[in-house]
Structures are given as structure tokens and as C-alpha cells.
Image 1 (spheres, rainbow, N blue to C red):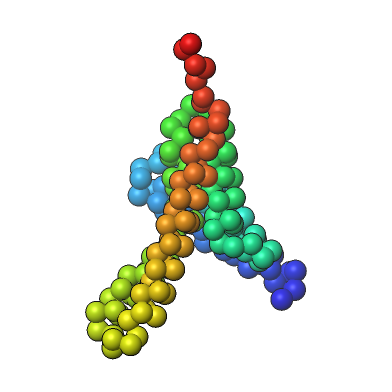
Image 2: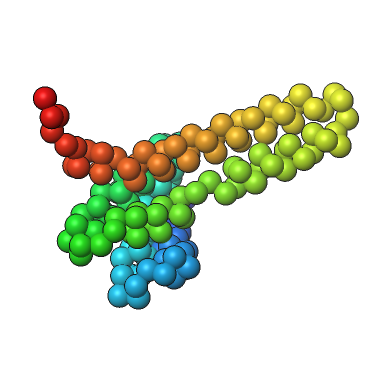
Length: 159
């Protein structure tokens, strides 16, 4: 795969992720004048994850870095516009949600109910791996979008 192919794939992925983020922004009643910001954050976060995946990093690390970008950008945009930070960070992080791994987990667990006894162990192992990956990716999203607030909004100790 050439560099141009990778760039085009990342840009296409970023475009559709931005559209998804803007769609969730509309669903969450984000004011129209700020939907383009939600779109940019969704595109930046997911595009970063995809670029890092092409670079050889795991989806978990890529998701964490993408969520950090969404978190920091959402924090500073919200400060600048005097708006709630969650408007930008949640809609920007939604394209990072690991739907495929969660789906595979559920399908694997459902297959266990009808599988032959000798196949149950392999199905449970695969479902467990997908469940763990889903949990790690969700934790990466949560930590990534919360980190800027935790870092910048620290209060000085009273004592």
C-alpha cells in the first residue's frame, strides 16, 4: 500500500467519522453553529486513530491518542466559546466507540449457546478477547476525554 493510498483512506475515514460526530451532535441538540466543531473533532480523533493503526500501533493505543486529541481540543474550544465541554468531547469521541468488538463479543456468546461441547472453549476464548479489547478501548476513550479536565481544572489543596 502506497503512502497516497494510506492518506486517502485516512481522509475518507476522517470524513465519515466527522459526519457521524455531526449526526450525533444533531441528536444531542448541539446548536447548529457548533456542529462543524463536533465534525472536526470526530474527524480528528478517528483519523488519528486510523493513521496510528496504519503506522503499526494497536487500536487501543490509537484510540487513546485520538481521544486525547478530542479531549484537549474540546476542552479549549469549550473554554473559548464558554460552552459545556461535553458538547464537543462526547460527540467527537462517539466515532471511536468499538462497535465491531462489542458486536463480536455478543455474537460469540450467543454462538456458545448452540455450539457443540468441543467448540465452546474456543468460542468463549474468542468472546473473552473481544470483550477485553472492548473494555480497554472504552477505558481509553474515557481517560482520553477526561484527562484535560483532570489536568487543567485541578484545585489547590485547602491545607
